[in-house]
Amino acid sequence: MSQPVITLTLNPALDQTVTVPALHPGAVTLASEVHINAGGKGVNVASCLADWGVPVVASGLLGRDNTTPFEDLFADKGIRDAFIRVGGSTRTNIKLVDASTLDTTDINLPGIQPSSGALAKLQLLLDEHIEQDSLAVLAGSLPASVNEGCWAQLARQLKALGAKVILDTSGPALQQALSLPPDALPWLIKPNQHELEQYLGHALPDVAAVAQAARTLQARGIAVVVVSLGSAGALLCCEQGCWLAAPLQLDSLKSTVGAGDALVAGLVAALHSTAPGQPYAWPDVLRLGMAFAAAKLAHIGPHLPDTSEVARLQARIEVRPLNP
Image 1 (tube, rainbow, N blue to C red):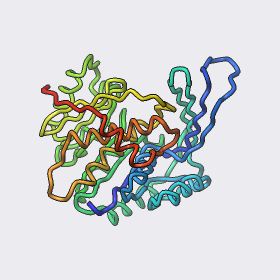
Image 2: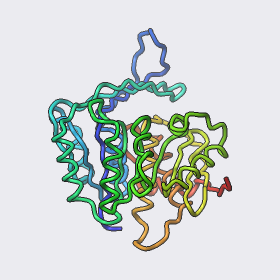
Image 3: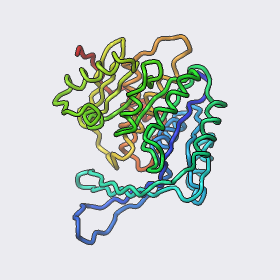
Image 4: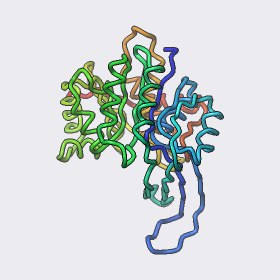
């Protein structure tokens, strides 16, 4: 597929990742590393796609007072910048990484407050950029001032334009999007297990329960359901079957921050590389997604290592079929 992937991020952030040897609340701790990266789920997906060589347009809403880190990232990676600038500053998210456990404590600050005019400009921009079978990634949270049905509205618009919509969000925004009629539902969703349990209102005690829940959503009209399972790997269900990918045991781990975004990027990269009219090789789609996620664990920020390292990881990913 030659046309670019488009990613949408309505609540981007400057991610300040602070690594400490061990996190002790209430105590003074000396940080061992500090990194500041332009982020937000859709930005992270775009960045990883660009590292893999996929053409990508990054769009959404960006506070005009602190755009430089985002503009530098887009320029460095050849990402087309199609963000709508709005008044104010893009938020900062602080991520405290405990190096002894790799647990991350997130402190997310309030986001921008876009006007209805900015959202209208974004809708017009999408009309210009989307082609038949475009891959469009809608990712992340919504600013507090934006209606929780915004992702649902954009998914409906993009699907009407012929796009294949990939949605990665949670909470009320996911609830609204999954309440759409079948002909407007996202094509692919990627919740993690907790987000799926939150949506369903009950626990999913094992992989079989997760697979059954994914199958139920797929039968309702969502073509592909991918669920990230943390230390249990990831699951993909579609009409052709269900597969479970086991996680890799890695020697070098920097941070789990952004691993889910890298998984989405790997899925999209595999989909984008499939020739028009050809069937998707779903186990291979899941395998590349998991390879991106594993590769990301060794890096802070939305970056992948060189393609040969990702390919080596990809060759090690085990994917097996399930029969939920």
